[in-house]
Amino acid sequence: MDARCYVDGAWVGGDRWFPVTDPASGEQIGRAAEADVTLTAAAVEAAHRSFGSWAGTTAGERGDILREISANVAHEADRIVELIVAEQGKPVSQARFEVSYAREWLDWYAGEARRVYGATIPAGRHDKRLVVQRRPLGVAVAITPWNFPVAMVARKLAPALAAGCTLVIKPAEQTPLSPTAFIEAAVATALPPGVVNLIHASDPSSISEALLCDPRVRKITFTGSTEVGKALLRVSAGHLPRMSLELGGHAPFIVFEDADLEAAVRGVLASKFQVAGQSCLCANRIFVQESVEERFTQLLADAVSGLRVGPGRLDDVSVGPLIDEAGFQKVERHVADALAAGAHLVTGGSRLTGGDYDGGFFFAPTVLSSCTDGMLLAREETFGPIAPILCFDDEADVIERANSSAYGLAAYVYTRDLGRAWRVSESLEYGIVGVNDPTPATPSAPFGGFKESGMGREGGHEGIEAFLETKLVSFVA
Ligand code: NAP
Image (cartoon, rainbow, N blue to C red; front, side, top):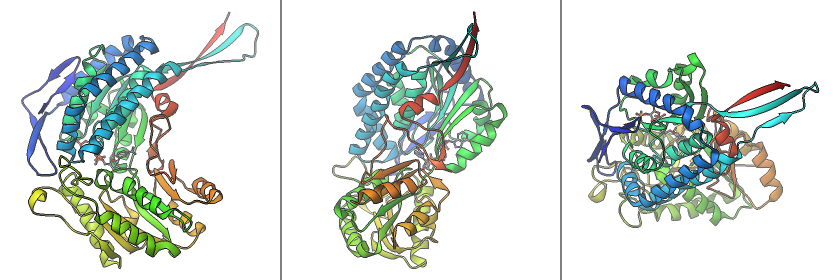
């Protein structure tokens, strides 16, 4: 597929393209048009020009268009799924889930557009009225990662359009094809030209200034690594756009001795091995209470060694490849460091090669026991299919260790003790806590991190608030 840019209602391909490869084989499967500074500025200009009329539509009209986009995405779902699998590597079932999850965001914000309420405030004089209005911010720039290439675009596009903002979207260079197919479906609706623009870049620093430092850009919504998030904050600081940053995670997954251990194992499988462990929400440190550590480790090892690894297009595969060589090397480094520091390899632990694995970045789903807090994998986001087990004594011990991270996105607690569930969930310094729930993210609830996992929230009413400005109109009559 050729993924072109979409600017001011027209598909644009230029002289310069960059290749897109399948992480399962290393083969080129398409290419994307490289946006330069001029095209980037044209996208911002188009979004700026169309803002007034788009902001002037009714909430009902914007909701109708979001529903139309959702219906078109459903119609194109097979093609979008195929592209996600080809460029991202995840199994077909997970790609299908991603497309339906993306549609949930569109559908939910189609309704939420109507619930942008203002307020009237009692004034201090009889002839005065204080009215608070909510207004769309203006042009929003959305920058998204490769692990959920379509869902991350939908998570930004849906609330932005619902609020009345216009958009310039830049997907990750590894996965430009499926977002392009998603935008093709989105713009084959009554959406006016210029409201949604899409640009691709293999070296985003070359267009960064045009994208982020233009004073017409009033909102930057970014999902990606903490490092890049901080850099974007610095680069754009000059004109103070509103920022939403959804950044990295380092989730503790805490299993108490009273937990349903089988459910906890299923929870680890759902949280840790989705997208081959390349998810910001995925369990990164599995804390298991000492008295059940041996049994839990055995149950987890049995389940993990049954996972089928392979190219996502094959039936029954539940773990695909890592995205690229850099991601692969980080996983290798974390495993080697843990083993050198005394971790015990229970299952997995190495690259998979031969047959369907050749040319791809496949790492065996791995369980490591006897891990400790000083190991790299207990300090950094691994972003791979590695499940490190760390032992703990009691509640106080595990809460302190779980919170001793600069990240604060998601945490998980498995227990059947209601009092403990409340105490621990309230003590965890994390934006999202799943109690006996490995998949807490949903469009209707706020999603985001404490500390260096970001600022702002996507999802729920807070998700649309992020694209709104507050205006006080004070009347004297
Ligand atoms: P990344 O390297 O930070 O890149 C994210 C996006 O930023 C990509 O589109 C990238 O473009 C772009 N980018 C990088 N430098 C830029 C610059 N100077 N100017 C403009 N754009 C720039 O992250 P990633 O490797 O794609 O994704 C993995 C990270 O995302 C992990 O840390 C994960 O935890 C995090 N994540 C967080 C959430 C959440 O909701 N909190 C969800 C998913 C993922 P290029 O691809 O062209 O470099």
